[in-house]
Image (cartoon, rainbow, N blue to C red; front, side, top):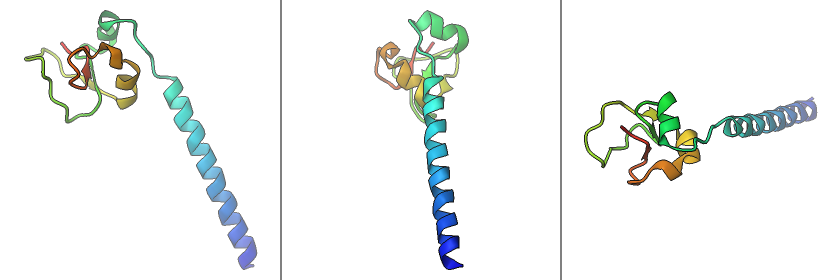
Length: 89
């Protein structure tokens, strides 16, 4: 009985780990890379921040940035002042 329980538990953990890895890969594939800040700002008026606690170095902005680590990482090239907020305005 213990052997069957151990085998079932191991199979369940293996299945859960495999399923979690697939979902992470799918989520990363859906992140859009924008050509420039004009395109990015059409959807995200305040730009994209890597985390909610980052501060803007460039001065006063009109809009609050959207927070997404994956989206920021995909569009990191648009962060000219390297303050972890891409295309802020």
